[in-house]
Image 1 (cartoon, rainbow, N blue to C red):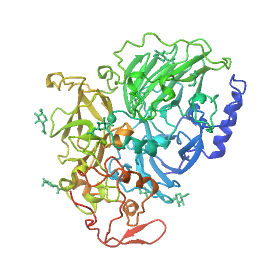
Image 2: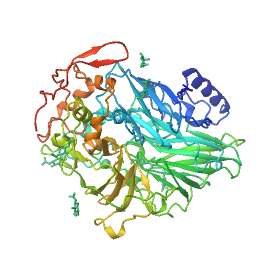
Image 3: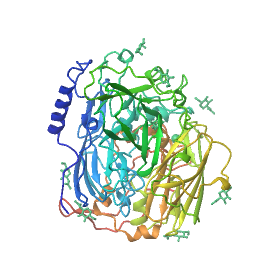
Image 4: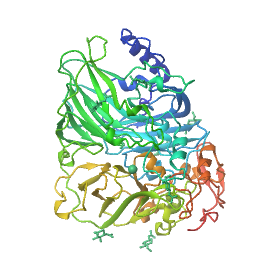
Length: 635
Ligand SMILES: *[C@@H]1O[C@H](CO)[C@@H](O)[C@H](O)[C@H]1NC(C)=O
Ligand SMILES: *[C@@H]1O[C@H](CO)[C@@H](O)[C@H](O)[C@H]1NC(C)=O
Ligand SMILES: *[C@@H]1O[C@H](CO)[C@@H](O)[C@H](O)[C@H]1NC(C)=O
Ligand SMILES: *[C@@H]1O[C@H](CO)[C@@H](O)[C@H](O)[C@H]1NC(C)=O
Ligand SMILES: *[C@@H]1O[C@H](CO)[C@@H](O)[C@H](O)[C@H]1NC(C)=O
Ligand SMILES: *[C@@H]1O[C@H](CO)[C@@H](O)[C@H](O)[C@H]1NC(C)=O
Ligand SMILES: *[C@@H]1O[C@H](CO)[C@@H](O)[C@H](O)[C@H]1NC(C)=O
Ligand SMILES: *[C@@H]1O[C@H](CO)[C@@H](O)[C@H](O)[C@H]1NC(C)=O
Ligand SMILES: [Cu+2]
């Protein structure tokens, strides 16, 4: 296999592209836009991949703090290669990605490749406490996996505490050389939607976890389209560096051409309604699965979800608003809410610009579609599942071998701290001894995991899992499953599942589902990927409150696989407390769990008989046989 281009452009190419971009926009009305606060890669059409053969792609992600101003307001951003959003990874079906992550932060990290199944490489799924120990500051770790048969629109992000909210997230696009819609568009763009906060996520989490029950999450300060937004600087604290004329995302189109926009919702919290004035959106892909085309004026997108739409540049040459409205109903706000006086309260309509070649560099004066209410749109809820039909119909499993009933709640714990519960139990990661190490190295049966691991297991190879999720909370929760996509057999906003209403013929296939407030959903998937797979609400604040469980798929098969030495080495003894991990100790455990819930494990290095011997720079061998850690407290 050959090594081909690195998708991540060298800095000088980025600077060059930016110069070209900035120059071509030089006569734009807002001329004095300062600094390239975000890189322009997302505003360029994707370079087509012309090869069909799988290749090895080497990518370096160097993580560091960089001062950037995505919405005009300068803050410390957790970046990869100095840019926000993080580098676009563009590969082909079947490619192997060899991604060297160098952690120059002061806090540990892990990276998750959202939507990639990690067939046979569970340990590269990037979930601290489940599939790996975190990558410590000052060290590197190589993720090395193939995207297999998967194609479509994905993203990558830190899965370590709330770190992705601080900026560590970027797109991951897998080209399909045999895409059924090839030929129906001329160019491809990637467009990301994000909410943005001015306070550091660690501070927001500390506030969220402070005693005093609250149903409300922090309110974002701004929304971004492809990393660009406009903050009302007169609201910034004195002394803050803030540019009131920050450039919006501008996508250029040529009249007569068709564009595939790959839209990714990389938010921590915000739900968006996406639309482009005057241009209908033809949906052709949902979460990596080609679908029968659906024409929409407005596309609802929840966190973690992805869509491809075709936009036909057939209107008058001009400029049109790209809109990502955050419906007010989906931002829960009360005077006690963290960041309650956010500018988003008056300015919840996030905009970018679709500009035709030859149009003057003016701001658009286009009007929003007024038929937004067709297609059963409800604030904060998914696109009507009855509209989503896989392009190649796939029949869902008719028989279930393993069934789980899951209830999701939020509420105060004994200390009146807000927690989220899966069947009554808040999740807490064991960051120094993740599930995969317990199973593969220590041969601990998952039935013996602590209750706060929220582990559910099944072993029927070739069988099918059914998960019935009851949302006993009034708000929506976008649940994302790792390692699989699933058939959505049924879904409702009230009552309980009615078997006679299940769609066992042609249900949609997704990897993220938004549970309606006080509603339910039934999903099914095949048991074919041994591993430890997280299933969690993708609202980052809820992850920190413990709204996570893990599915242990075919333990005995996992044990037959070989854990790469580099993954074992991440769990070597000698971790130090870091500044960030120390935060929650101010808010100790509720006594129900051994570790502080919600991601903030108390980082006490435990004793282990394992010795690590570095034989050479690349390979690290374990000499001692790993034993169960005796430092761990029992439930
Ligand atoms: C990963 O990148 C770091 C920093 O550039 C480098 O020191 C290290 O050798 C790289 N690791 C591998 C396996 O190439
Ligand atoms: C990546 O993993 C494959 C399959 O295990 C292995 O053959 C290859 O040597 C690895 N590459 C690197 C750079 O580690
Ligand atoms: C828990 O905190 C909430 C919000 O601060 C407060 O209204 C409530 O009285 C507290 N309940 C208890 C039992 O302390
Ligand atoms: C910006 O914020 C200031 C202060 O809150 C407010 O007076 C002004 O109307 C806002 N401007 C816009 C365009 O929303
Ligand atoms: C992005 O996801 C968040 C969280 O689920 C959701 O609130 C928001 O509406 C989504 N945005 C779009 C455009 O769907
Ligand atoms: C934002 O969009 C909503 C829904 O389309 C509209 O009702 C509202 O007036 C808009 N708000 C602003 C500030 O433009
Ligand atoms: C799940 O709930 C249904 C309906 O209450 C019940 O029939 C079924 O036995 C439950 N499944 C399990 C595994 O407990
Ligand atoms: C784990 O324990 C359960 C319950 O005792 C048992 O049914 C299962 O076979 C065990 N699995 C393995 C891999 O040992
Ligand atoms: Cu949630």
